[in-house]
Length: 231
Image 1 (cartoon, rainbow, N blue to C red):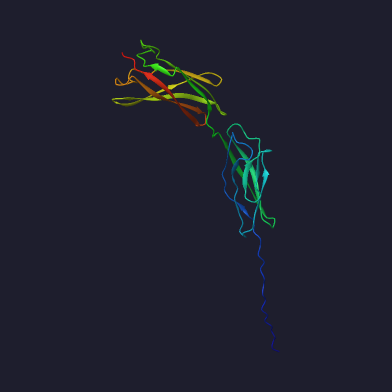
Image 2: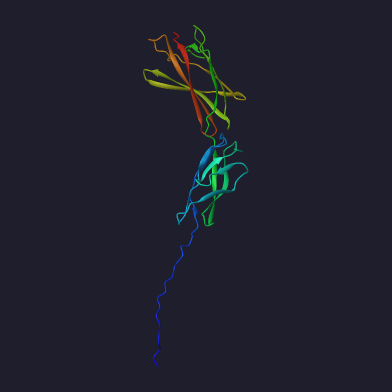
């Protein structure tokens, strides 16, 4: 007998399988002088299905940061390190189907604040120095003082000025010495070429530069009046 066969067309429905999200590379940075609410950066995520994602902090030093569940924005909440350091946190991202991914991120806490304080010169009018702070007409030395501080500590204080000569400008720099605490001091003298023969006096800008150990520099300018000392 001849066999009888039946052919049926079957249609298979393939369900859309949910795929897990992923976290992207992110850079987080904060200041050791930061405060609660400062933005450190953003954690980014992606999802193959285009789903909305939820971010969460899984591991972090207590009270340090929080993350916006929708945007991935990371903010300080307190307990800020007061010296430059790196802190690790672990962040998760989850899709509506419950699939998630976790990654560890580094927060760089850096010193980005320049030193601050007060600067002084005394007196603010002197004669040129003919040598060793001497001018027969009067005083030829200026005391430069700085009372300055920084979270990471001040490492140097200098005073610079430029003298215009027929041969071209000459820059002079004096490094102040640490006296005690936050106080720095030094003595400034201005040579016989500071004031030209045509002038009786000049107003000379003095540029103070205060540096901390992490390359942050604060500058300020004071003016000294230098009088001609006939030699």
